Image 1: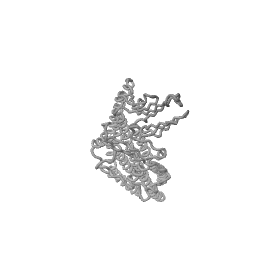
Image 2 (image 1 turned 90 degrees about the vertical axis):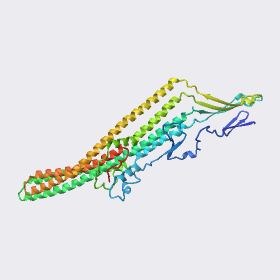
Image 3 (image 1 turned 180 degrees about the horizontal axis):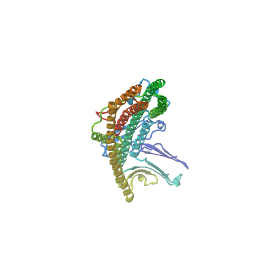
Length: 490
């Protein structure tokens, strides 16, 4: 048996000539010009938790050779039964906004979902910048098997497609920009979760304080009823006063049921944001909320929002991606190439010196209508992104202006309640009790004063909670904490 051995890309190709059997054993075919090597089967069982993306240092230039690594770390998803809120806040006397936000961002499945989406986008880079797999071919002539007149005839070849210079860089630039946009969407999700966590905490605070007001109101009504009962027994007032007090006590007890439901819902919302069971126990909310000074100039905040809002930065990255797509569509007018090397043993003596061959193939890009359509599509997508960026910028400016106006309104309303309305309502109840005891005012006037005090206290707490809700909204719409004059929240 005669054996021929040919080395292709450093890998032996053995052809064994027998009477009717041929063994073709390609030991290994390397990736010509490819920057990555296929992993062994055993190694592929390992699952990585981060994906490395290469980002040009100068983002508008798609052909930069210097690359900067960007990594997206995976946020683990925690099962609800793994950690409960009692363990999470075991040493806390009350639930603060800072610890709640930290717990929500650490445990929320939304962050893990957005991180996985960013990893999906990041994983496109090595796919779109890699060369295609090299091709290997083998041909043989059956009639030459066992022939005594001619040598065994076979042909082996390997080829590699090479895109026109610059195409892979443009595909990579598009993938990098999309990956950065997906990374910005993670930050946008964090801002939204931060606002939701703070808002839920202030709902919890409001429900707890309203229950406190309700308990104090019930105590006051019971005192008023005792006063009315004592005066009824002495014949100074009719029985109607005592009965009216019983009605008011019943209404307050009914209101207590609604407030307890509101507290339960607020706790469930907070636990859900932390990926915990809805009925998990929580520390009590803050005792007080003290609004700070009004925020600074709205124009400065609008400029700040346009600069650092993650959704705007994501659109800017997608504008860059569409620009790369347009440049790539224009470059499709250029041909791609395929280099080939072959060993053709069909050549017999005396032409055996012609067996080694090299070649070059290229496509002929003459389908202009298809390529013109691709360029028009890419240009339209770029124009669409530009319009989207302009629309979103207008929306951001409006949201900032609206949030500033609402925050200023809440600040002024809270000061009005604390400085004027609540003191007057408390004095009104005191005066009503004294006047009723001396018989100067009817019982309904006292009850009306008490109702007014309860309503105004509820409204004062609601105004404080609304201030901090609107403060959380302002932080979201400007893309982070308010600089300098940011309100202090517990």
